Image 1 (cartoon, helix red, strand yellow):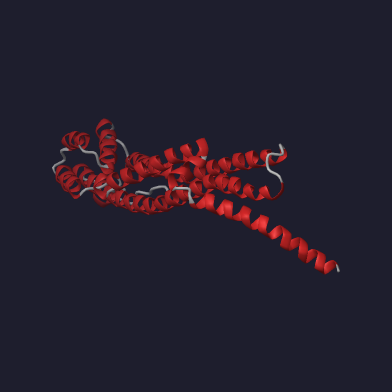
Image 2: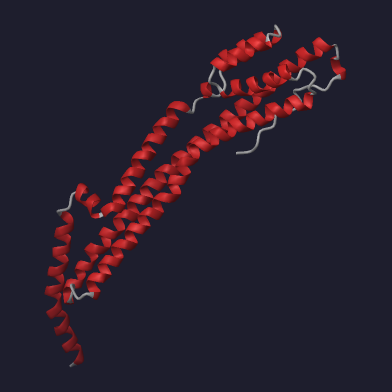
Length: 261
């Protein structure tokens, strides 16, 4: 008897539940992508701004994070020729006209050497190392914006979801959704989840390209370290010849360490 009653109750409720589900499905099918973005509210607008900024950074890094902006064969050949001629002032002027990172290291090193001709080898190495670390830090700092976006975007999306869920449950609390119409709550839930999905997409793209550019920066930093060591070795050999110290002097090319990225 009880089983028959339950079956009758289920059969009675099934048409109303099915009709409500069909209404929700029809509403979802009729929504375009533009309307979906509009459902996200002002939070989706913030995510769109983040996505545009992310795309601009990625394009900028593809254009600017190249080996030629850190070390170029043209600069290395010209600087080697000037160092062998001991034309340090001419090399300093040439460094001012160049934009490579190794040019900044060479400029700072030769500025210190010309102003302090009696400086020891460790002091010259320390100046070169400090400027090399500064240039490596500039490269690392540039791509860190993508990592920041990768962390901020999901939080912004989650904020939009929380706001949307609060609005949906406020409708229930105010009695605006009753009975089988509670299935319409699903529409409010998926609208709230739009911002989380958008934030995750932006974060995934930003972190993927951050990893790619980080590898490129590490390669460029290794190139800068090798170039700096070569410049110091040339300067050291010229100073040794000039001062007649030979092998008794401490060479400048012992190391040119860079901080780890």
